[in-house]
Image (tube, rainbow, N blue to C red; front, side):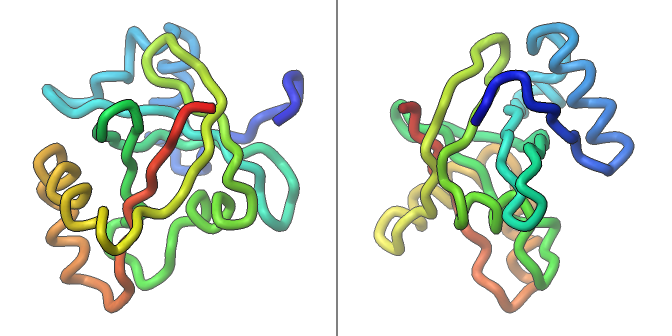
Length: 145
């Protein structure tokens, strides 16, 4: 992703406010969203627009990798950021003050049960979200490059 390009933040008002505070404070505000629940900022390239898009996501860890869940609250459709990553897996991630390039991939069927348990230990509502939809909610692995 090219530096200097304008980044469009999530159109959701509270998410946009969260991102703004996160960026302005270098992650000092917003990294810990709720007690024990941490968020990262994920920047993807829009698959149709070509524009850079940024959202805040709850994350977990699996060794050196970061995990995020493409839940969209149990919607029948995948979130746009996940569809963007399917088209262009190269991404930028900010965790607290640390910003880095990463490659995204969907957890394999063998990995997913372990990673899903890790993520539901961080945010138990993911189990509820899965009951709301027929689609299998993906776990996304973000690996630093």
